[in-house]
Length: 420
Image (tube, rainbow, N blue to C red):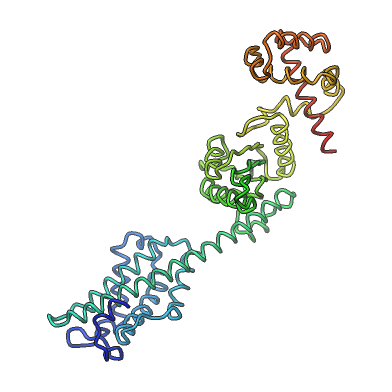
């Protein structure tokens, strides 16, 4: 039961609400004058509305204000809050303003201020004996405000979701075109997104979220939530400028390079994205002119594969960080010769294991021994055996460099072989 029902006589539901000896709707019936007053107040006293074009205030806002005043007057005459079907114009206006970028807070404040002004006009003639009628009027206005707020918020959010989806589709279309070498000004106009002169081409890998490995959770749902968190963060960090083709595993991003201090892909921004996605992220970045985006994307993903093969930790990598690994993948007699240096160790898995551990522990014998659950003397013995079989002396800096490069070349060669 509403508050107004508690204060209405049983037979009063069909009679107009009266305040001050006249129908409560009378002060609102000159809708042109009241609407003009309200819109004038919006323009001068509400800071957010001062930024709206005068044309919008005189046109859309004034028209909607007159329509809403008619709903309020009818509500007092019928003593009934308008039904949802009567808020069509309110919802249409909210959707239009959402598409135009008018803040939701500005719209809602306008409605709230309008209700306050209308309520003041309606109750101004009140007399001492009108307490019950004032209570009914208050309840009706509060119910109306609740209904209008819900209608505006729902329509605004629905339209924003639609706009975001349209932008995402346009961004994906443009990204696909640029990555295939088909970017054009005509396509950019159609998508509504300008093509930059240069981009950061980013290859991205997303780690699994713990929920994806939890048997009690639907792994696909958890993965999609992870991706949505990342996409939301991308829109925030890069102000919806990044063009992305992403799956729950990773993908490719094109970040425009500008002269106005816009956010770029850095270690710091990648850390922000990782925090939002709630998973570690690994990315490689290549600077590229627009017409070279396809080749740069291939290079970025090749670098990302080198990060994976090399067992490097999550983070952001550039060509300078992977120059040796990249050069080793170029092939040639020298690279193939390096990859075969360790062939004599094929029959000695413990020597391979010791070499990797020793290099991974920065040549610390004690730490290596603990990791392998052997005595330090056993580590020394195995290092001598490696030197005997391969001529790589891990007691020298030259031997250490040779071993690291040989291991990397071997891992890269094995990776290529597995893909074939």
